[in-house]
View (cartoon, rainbow, N blue to C red):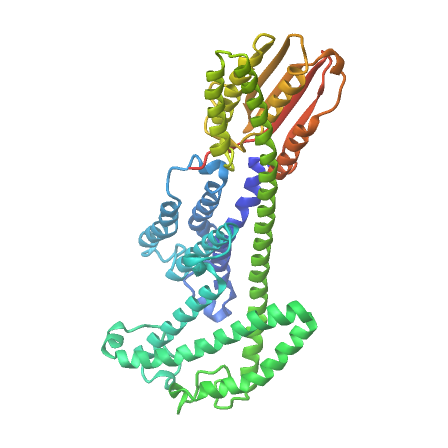
Length: 509
């Protein structure tokens, strides 16, 4: 996939949080009744549209830019911390706008609610992105479990419990006086900590009831009933459980001290009747709202687990293919060393040193997922030197490698297969002089590697690629899918021509 295509597919979803906050801030005043809207300080719609554009368009651009900076091709060039960019755009910039425009009632205002909405949605998007990437690394363990759906729901219920405890402590006598002002009196809370704990415990019971309904839906109704019995059984059993449980749960909540002797108790129906139809409606709506969200998270976890399994299978197959490469190279080199030792050649010590360098690269770098292109080309150069100690009297090697390869990376031990084939089929089987031409170049983030060698006269017209090229093609398919080019065969000059094109990755920062 080209870089421009990745911008289109990966960049646009990051804009949705800002777009949603922008549209809500723009359209919500228009939803008010006519008599209320007439007194609203917000400018008419079209005026509000272009004025809000001045505020939200920079936020939209920064949100998109942050997403662009997370792409692999841009990560290597990143210098400014992304968290700092987010703080400047979503905290300092709105604060500066508010301070600058607060005295002008005719200009579009950026209130605290607007700021909380846009910054909260943006932060939720990046947290969700971090959660997805963490799932790709494997099952959630340790502190990473804080990203789970259970932990997030518990955190939200805890915040809800704290908020209600603070509100009721700040405004006595609790539910006996309606409506309750949305204002927290911290001095009163500090003066009456026992009352605050009294409310906190009762709302914790409410939160526990809601979490219990969620837990039953996720771990029993969805994971067991829906998975094993089907959709109809899941729906019917869910409705049966709601009808059986809504009245007992409502009665339990009505027994809380804060619901005693008040006109509007803290139950969905707002009355002392546990069988109130609104209580049933609340549980039904809770089930209709939470079930799709749970199903979405369950599907995401299942997809992540399947992706991990496929990734592990690919790694296992790659390791098996890699194990087929290393012994082949090692046995050939040891045979060369054995022949030189029989001849008592002075080249034997050099051959041992070259072999040690090559084996060190195979053992340590060959097991990595990616290596530097410069290291891979140095490995090939050592391989040429090693082979030329044995066949320099009849073989000429012409190498054209780039002087500067930057920090580009690729999987290890891919190029060596083409070079080994050149020696195996073009040099070792020929008694005549032979030639090998090698070239490597980088074009638009892709490597073009060409290996060309002369062939013995009796095999000049062969089309047999050998097991080595089949092995290489399979590795490329596992690593790149279809985003590579590998072609080989005899050319018009009677030489064997092999060409490999594949994408390169920038070095991780």
